[in-house]
Image (tube, rainbow, N blue to C red; front, side, top):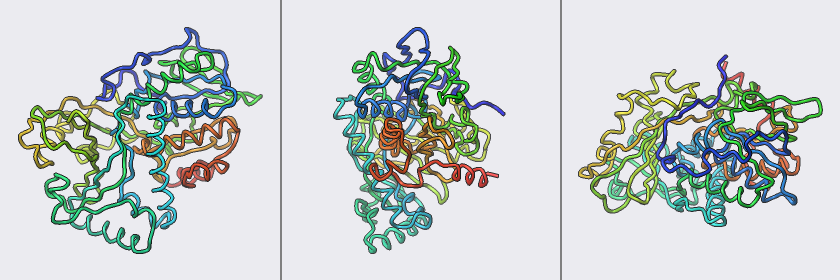
Length: 449
């Protein structure tokens, strides 16, 4: 069995184009021998968990943050940069969760957007955070009609998840969205930001505020974790062993590399994204983010217009999904997809958007990133099943920006107060479907066999 660990020298993304001064930070030359709380992972999940642990603690604990590579070089530094949930995702969950469950999910995601905004403002993070709207766009008539029927039935029944959604008038679809051939478009809440700047600047605040309590160790791969007889966690790294009273796995796609019980439960999935730059300025500026579904059953492309007029756009699954080994159970973000696959981005904005035909928009950068997918589509949050001193927030299915900020706050409270998911779920409005458990692991394992 291959060990699932971050690979060296990942492809550089647009978000990582301005490395932070702490990208290779090691607070001490030697790895500490022990600490109260260790966190594996320095993406949004790891750093926000640390942030909330310090905020909630009466007495700041000794915390060590470890990462196999440079600071925030995983999925947070490679994603689309917006926080939202698609209307089609909500509508599709009604048979499984029921209307009340979907209402809870929508309320949770809207709370996440508010949490991101609050932290960015409280800490004065220069990360280009904008509270925006996002268009979910369908280019297939049947897709559009089916979604609208579900929405209308739920709206008439008074369900919360429909309250902050607007359908673009059919006669103005192309005019309003600028997307050629749009058959339907829904406006939903979202926020966008530069995720790498958010995370790295947040860590910078913590390092300044807690110089004696926080120890950061980058480029320190964790290769194994065990629990000693006294309940202490022994964390084996390339530079020695760290002992921690409590341990947080903010490891997303790489979780099964350290927790074998998550094999086939959190599976690494390789995706692709790009940064497109117009050589001729396009006006008006695109003010919404987008998810665009071109064909039924096809994964949506996602777009995040940047304030400078450039575009981050990811997806392109139609070009590589037939080559399963290139993306499924694949955690190699040091290589790009082949030129035929990457060719999907050439002329993308001119092909898809009105008003971009003469923009001379060119692909400035293409990169790969690794997502952690689960069979049921939801993250695993809470105590690691069977291990009282370990906690997890991982398996975000490519939607971490819409889930992490609040789940990190909840996990921080679990760690600080030695509590379980059930103790915090109501306070933070976290859907029950996010709770990790032995039964959920067993069910996921059964479903994948």
